[in-house]
Length: 292
Image 1 (tube, rainbow, N blue to C red):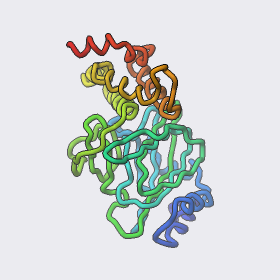
Image 2: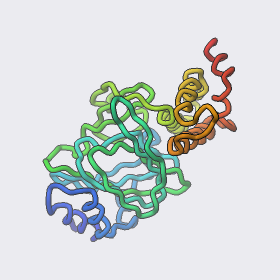
Image 3: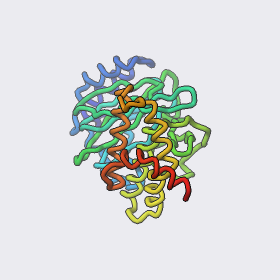
Image 4: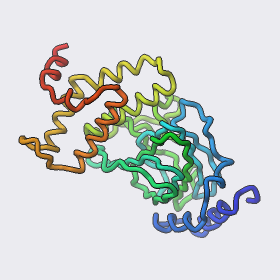
């Protein structure tokens, strides 16, 4: 391990002490290792292909844990995913990455929160975590990832679930959790949960943003924009809104209201319009779109 910075050596040695950890224990180990962005520079990959949603480099692989470095250009974002076989881990963020957490339960997937990491923040990872990370800043960002499990596996994060929100499917993968994965990188496709409106809206917007970065002339972009402004999405919006506000337009679920407004704002930016919310609220708009 002579090639590794002292902080990485310390991290590897501490992780090798036992097979199973609780998230708070990993957070403590990472904090005590005192890793810096300079220590991770060797594994940075800011020249990754645009078709990759972020850069992804393996630092160290042990029988039951892996250490990786992710590189995030402005606009890079993962798909919604879990971590496969991994039962414990932690992520340290050297920048203000956006972080969304989701709940998958009874055939449904919903957005629980969408917030920003603070620089240097360390977050524990549990087996049931379904989340998404992205760089919404104008700066390049590195993140340190540790994933582990009690037994030996060829890939600690193998057999991961990537959620294809628009099609209500789950893609089983063994690599990067990228948007718009080619078929050959998907091990299996199975039926997945149905998303609530905010989750579905934001996911298709993020897909559109990824496609635009890869090829601004991609003919799928117009189809995505049209779908967001379709009768289908208008009806989904109004149905969801009825669970967030009452008949007098009083907000009855402030958490979901804030999430909805955040996703509407992202859609406005993608569509380059002023207010999708008002457009959706026009019942005539829904009726006209249904007749087309």
